[in-house]
Length: 255
Image (cartoon, rainbow, N blue to C red; front, side, top):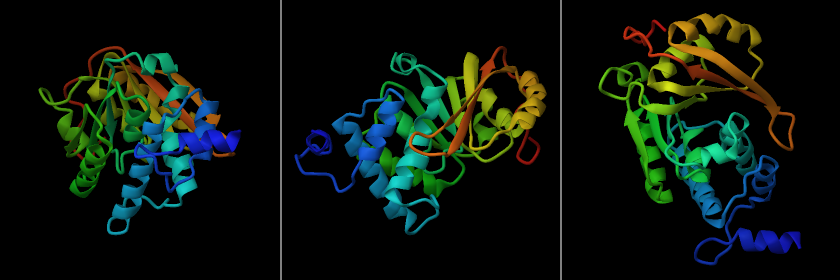
């Protein structure tokens, strides 16, 4: 019965079987309460193919093995469900910006699984933006846009400042620095969600002062391992309580 189920689910739109076996991703997502549709699996398949193709001539990711990409990129991106219940993420009218998105993680997997979320992807490298635009077109992702530039530039008044319900980032930087880049994009009442791959209790304590200066407060931290693995992850949710002072973020090199 299990194989028959997978045979049905893994068929693409034109009735042909997909090249990739998504059994692991399907089961991992189920553990988090996510049911992937045939259309979403097709989008993940196309996304993976584009990722590997473009990675052959530009540096997008060091991880290219299919199962590893599913676990460490696709599933990891979807760990936003550890911070919010699925009903909230599917309620509609949520705007989300992904700062330093790189190859589109976590923004594009979030958009695939929660298509009603309005997603903005910001990255400083134009080559990556061209890749992301190709992905958006190929996957037919509506209300998903890209911006090429630095986080400290688009956070200025009358651009993207304080326009989003949620700001996410998987960027490798300490929480104080990330908060200065990300909290200016968040509406009062919204959240900055930082994805981390290690325990940063001391770092989070040190960051609490910076977060407070930027108009936020540390709301909660959720620790977990990715399903079917011992890969440790956590998400830090920082609530925006008041407007960020206009002098933040400072110019490149200062945060």
